[in-house]
Image (cartoon, helix red, strand yellow):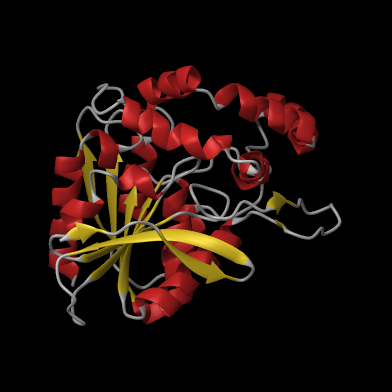
Length: 304
């Protein structure tokens, strides 16, 4: 088995970077596609892709705007279209994923998504229909800042929200926020929140997150994403996919509520498992890869 170097797939007018780890070239081998979260890349699956590739054809991909994929400028709803620009959205990314599955993988697939990659995986599964065998959501983004989640009783947020939206539309604001966050010291501090055990926070991980931020247009996907105040929630999509779903959750995720994940498990019949990884945070696939890889493999063997 070998982890191939990054390959390029042409999608629309853009270049999409992806890689494949596999043991054998069997047509009937199960396919897995790993979808990273916000600010990450396919390399964030550094402790998963080779392991899973021992048994499955395991693909990883850089979403448009991230990693080594093209980084078109962000065009918001009210802005006139410009060449080499796009509206970053879950529809855009899920169409990227579903088209990649159709054109490159060309056979049924399990989708594995971390954070916003989970919402993207769900929407792509809806598009793929029978060509998606199951979805594995690792600390799926709950998108608490989405308009649809704002409570009428929250007077402060109702007042603050229009101001916040106006501010983050401005490139000077989004660029300043990005520049402040995109340095190794801040990245390490964020990782110390995301990985509460401190396990696997190393120089390699910091470089994985830092290097793409140095590319010329790296601020644009950030601007596009922080302006997504009205897009899909996972709960909008669960009933639209007739496939088994697994939730894997870090017990100490500081950003995505474990209690809400437990409610999802109660309320949606196609969620077959909720596996909680003790001591882990928002990215258990990297913080506790051995346990995460085992859970992913178990679910696929149960549902294949």
